[in-house]
Amino acid sequence: MNVPPMVRTCAALRWGLLAGMALGFSPSALAQEAAGAGELDLSGSVRFRYEAYDNAYRSSGARSDDAVTIRTSIAARYTRGRFRAGAEIRDSRGYAIDIDTPISSAHIDPLQVPQLYVGLDVSDQVSVTAGRMVLNFGSKRLVGDPGWRNAANAFTGARLDWQDPEGKARLSVFYTLPDKRHPDTKGEVIANAWSVDTEGFDLRFWGAFASAQQGPVALEAYAFVLDERDDATHATRNRHLRTVGGRLQVPAAGRWDFELEAALQLGRIRMSRDEDAPSVPVRAYMAHGEAGYTLPGSLDARLSLQADMASGDKAGTARHERFDSLYGPRRGDWGPTSLYGPLGYSNVRSLGVRAEIAPSKRFDAFVDWRRLWLDSTGDAFAFTGIRDASGASGRDGGSQLQARVRYWLIPKRIKIDLGAAWLDKGAFLKRAPKVQDRGDTHYGYGDIYFLF
Image 1 (cartoon, helix red, strand yellow):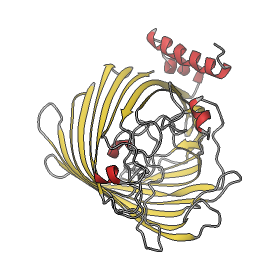
Image 2 (tube, one colour):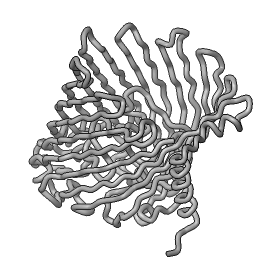
Image 3 (cartoon, rainbow, N blue to C red):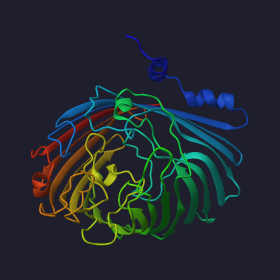
């Protein structure tokens, strides 16, 4: 079989790293010798994933499918005095994938550089960073690098970070150009075709994030701005979104904890990708509330109640009301994405319960159940892509049950992650136009991580 040189190189690198790790090779130790007066840390990981689903909720694509993906990451960080620099190479590939498999460049993005930056600690309180980087703010519901998804959310630009002398108050200000992942076509994606990820001033993302700690109470406030316009090859919705919000966390007396986050989104958006389509004002919102209780005992068990809401676009108004979750990962609140991923902070209401245990540093697990509704009956339900513009299919989205188990086979070296989800389809997902399968969706995955 004729294997392209890039594939051979990546495969050799991946298996060489695993072999070295098995023999006790320590990249960090070797790097220390080469770093001289500075300090150089090297780390990496390889993750193998198999996932499958049946009875698709989508209007098109395979009704049942599976896939194998491999993500390899190698990261380096160099510090010398107040100077620092970092880089990461991330290679995300997929195998046994058909043309109608619901996978994109969010999951397959071969040999990219999501991080390549330099930084300077101007003082003990102020630092600046410039280059390509990942951003993680607060709960990561609106801005974060997905750890579960294969491809990174990368940004090219600069950020300034400040903290007070006691470390109880922090402020981050940033201006970036979000990474546009390639390849673009489905054929290129399933062929693991290599194409450089790009950025440009046609898509800008900037803002500020502040946090403060007062006793047990943690407060956060943020303002994010997304400005988008058509580029030379792609028509867009010309999003000009201003998102402001805040988050409150209160670990109360005893073992109770509370969390509340809410955001308001304003601005303007084009009604379609047609360059002649009119632009309308945006007014959208999201909210998350959670109350949990940690039980006494060695299991470190926690029970929690959750409530979530994100607005959908309502018919007959002169506004766009569907909340845009920007660059927020969905795994933490809403379950697995990739071949699955029906839920997220857009046109959804939800009430749920979660039970978690972490009896040791090597093992943790949770089970989560949610009841689901549409916020607007005439808009697409969450991330399913299913819509009934007439509103006649109602707002009953059904429910979702999911579970996950993680265990370190070798602490800090080899970890397994097993999970499953069951989407019990409600009346909307059975009656709406273009629904191709009325059966409940079942999904499962298995990951094995090698870290070094």
